Length: 298
Image 1 (tube, one colour):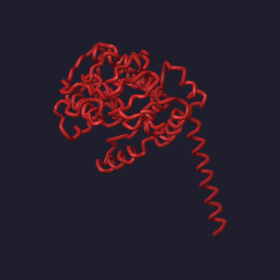
Image 2: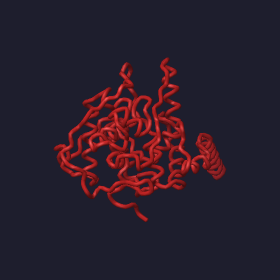
Image 3: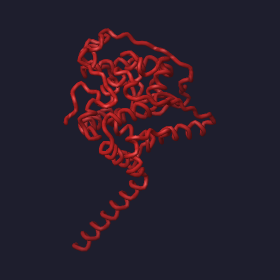
Image 4: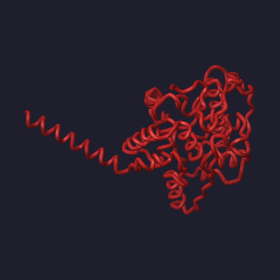
């Protein structure tokens, strides 16, 4: 029996070592992650994935992306993204375990993958190095890089990288290109409703946008406005949305169905009325300071 127990223990350790090695093989170097503090990447794994997908369909890949500092981003967009994607951004170390728990409960209840629970930092790690294809190994690698990002970069830099790199439509990356693509203006000039419209697209930008599905995008935008009100960034009585949030409308990384149209490159400018003006308590966000209705813990 003792030999069996020792053998089982050794087998488990061997398996764990093999899995750890497999996870480690797909990681960027720690020096590369540290370098993001001062260097802005020109490409990401997600951009490469979309290029591969376009070529597989016989289509020429397109990329629209330009960098802006946080000072060049509308505070409304920063608030919309924080309210809808990661309300605890300044209070966690990369993973919001409460959100993960709620996500698991909701996915079990709906019997499908309806909610991801990923933080802004996790989403950045995925975009930078791993793409959207789901696997437990990818998730493990994503968690490692998430921890490195939080350890090596200030929150303001993580947020700046996120806003400048994430996907916002077919071939559209970063908030500057997104603002010009969807609203015909720079990211610095976005209104509350326009900022909410961009934030609403983040869970699935190629499917949840004003051209592929305008009605679904408007519902998602109203949900973001409601979340902004609840977070204290704008007045709570927003567009008559009431006390309960509108339902979520898109699953994270949900693929386009067969035959579904992708948004064409011409600009569109949908608008959504907002009943309440910005709350004076909602702070602006300089490059060197975080955007949050409550300051992050020391």
